[in-house]
Amino acid sequence: MTTFWTIWISIITLGSIAGSYMLLRWCLSNKTGVKEGESMGHEFDGIVELNNQLPRWWTILFYITIVWALVYLALYPGLGAYKGLLGWQSSNQTILSLEESEQALQASIESGALVQYDREIKFANEKYDPIFAEYAKVDIETLASNEEHADVLKVGQRLFLQNCAQCHGSDARGQNGGFPNLTDDDWLYGGTANKIVETLQRGRNAMMPAWLDAFGEEGIKEVVEYTLSLSGRQVNQALADKGKTRFMACAACHGMDGKGNQMIGAPNLTDNIWLYGGSKRAVTETLTYGRNGVMPAFNKTLGDDKIHVVSAYIYSLSNK
Image (cartoon, rainbow, N blue to C red; front, side):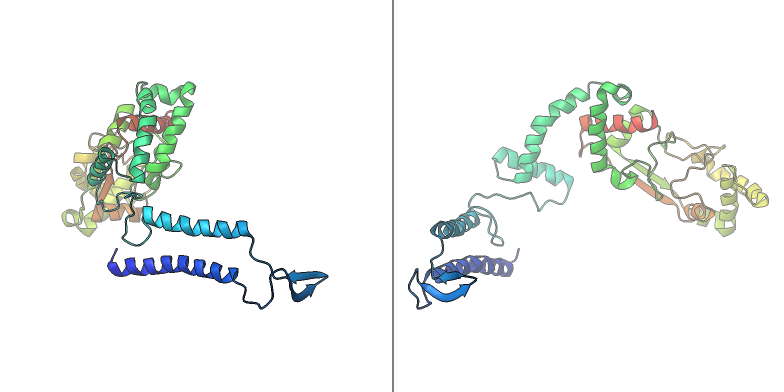
């Protein structure tokens, strides 16, 4: 924060406290010309207004709040760039990456710095890590299918909502734009427990190249027709027959039969399930411009034990 804003905030804050004090002192002085306890000359429905002092208990509380405000501002940050005598801060706000965050977290814990976020993380890790370690001892298939572990799946669902729902939706059914539905049995890289764990730990980087330069606009139309025919759609058969020959270039990833390859995350083109939309226009865009999909790695964010629990929840969605 710049010097200007520090001064500006300090003037407004301290000025407000000083103003409150002066207003209180002014209210405690008798400037009415009427002695205390005597009538002010006002009467409402038989009730006479007297010139009385502010209640003493109320005045003392007002003084206490002023002192409390000054003590708080001295100990904690509240006046611009001033960090307070205790050095307390809510979080490490200068970090720019996950690595920097981990380093700052470790440094603040070792030094005993008053960083609220880091202390809460330390407390949570000490309390919950042993619990997740116990969950990790049970295989994913058992966690997903055994009613005795229903509470574990609820924990996994919470972690999913916090970390995965932004892309896959709160119901895990995905959405157009490259975010797969996790509740069906259609998996790009495989839906076994180990594959789900691998995906969460390492992330995925999918790349579909653009084919406009290789095929040309007419060639794109032909391949689109053939691709749509693989899932039983009604197409222009003449164009589809020509596209079948060009599809040889696509078969390197999707296979000669178009059923995909889970080793490299190539989608199955015969089941009519589409990540970016299955309309003729959407498939044309995919072939013309290509697609790039990224699934982030969560090994550093969640850790292996939490990934184990999230994987059990995801596995349970498609294995009822």
